[in-house]
Length: 263
Image (cartoon, rainbow, N blue to C red):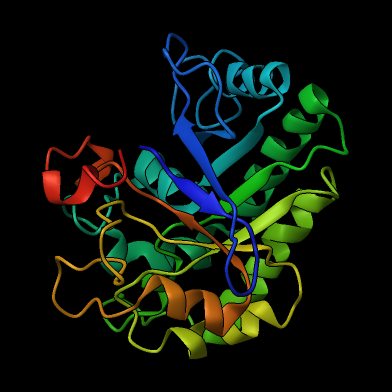
């Protein structure tokens, strides 16, 4: 789980920054940023903020002058822990069928969980911390026709996104927000436009790992994934965060075609 990001730029000279997934005993002590998934479950803290995991990452980032980055997979984690709903490429019942209904039925819980993490983060790093939030990997899946009861309208997704960001910034006003862009979405520009118009999106990120560093295409190994890194930057004007180094279900990828160029 080794995402890397370039900051927003035009033309040549884009700076490249390296980040790594936080582990308590990781040999990587210095990186531009450290990442963790939030909404993960523990016996002591449920799906809430875990000071022994999330808190330790924030402390490592603070002590090494790195940026803290959250994989804010709150909807999926809550659905998994409370309803047994799996990621679309992991099992059944899946988020591609039951995700939209979960959102409709649990929006207050989703928003409260965002506020909970932001509040605890501010307590560790201070309200001025520029924590990066990779918002809801696979967010697009809740709009799809496979959803029982119908997918969520695009306008409802934008409204929910804005509400989640508002909860974060009520505790962390300097937080930086990244919008998920799944590379298999056919009309990415149309999907992104209403989110970008709200002005709260600082970055774009890919999701699901399995990205190809040695190709112009984000997922060159998968048919139908035609989106390129450069096109994504040009159509948005945002910096990109590349989510890489692992495969389905967050497991470490052993495919050399995916990892060697990143490593």
